[in-house]
Image 1 (cartoon, rainbow, N blue to C red):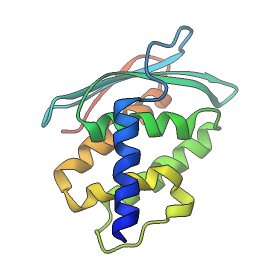
Image 2 (tube, rainbow, N blue to C red; image 1 turned 90 degrees about the vertical axis):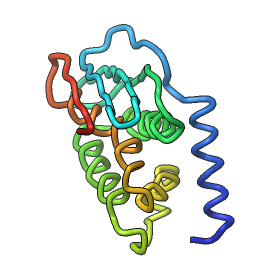
Image 3 (cartoon, one colour; image 1 turned 180 degrees about the vertical axis):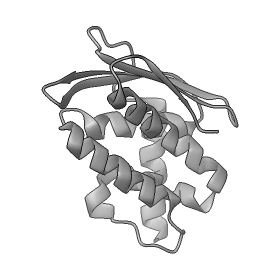
Amino acid sequence: MSSELTDLYQEVILDHHRAPRNYGTLPGANRQARGHNPLCGDRLTLSLRVVDDRVEEVRFEGAGCAISRASASLMTDAVKGQPVGVVDALFERFHAMVTASPEVPVDDVGMGKLAALAGVRAFPVRVKCASLAWHTLKAALASSAPAAVTTE
């Protein structure tokens, strides 16, 4: 990966950490899950409004490291308005990207801004920070009852 691309990715992560998108409570949510990464203390609550098998609205609240917060922000932007099937497929692609060997090329075009998080695969302990919001999303979509997930 070029140093210019690395710099751009770092800027995307810092921007989403400092000014997270879709942060706050979601009145009328019909799906919710809480996520916790005991290794570094990241915690988040993800709330969704799913209508006709589509993620109509999504918000998150919580505290965590820059990677965790940026990942939640980028994820909410990526899944808002999407059919649940598309969200499930995106989860699989994201998970494959962050857990791949650092030598595996990143699909920059297909992953869009989410590709900024590919750098965590060089730091295995940070993969849990990047994937916490995604596992929480999966739990929220799986049940209309509040769910809880942990990275351990």
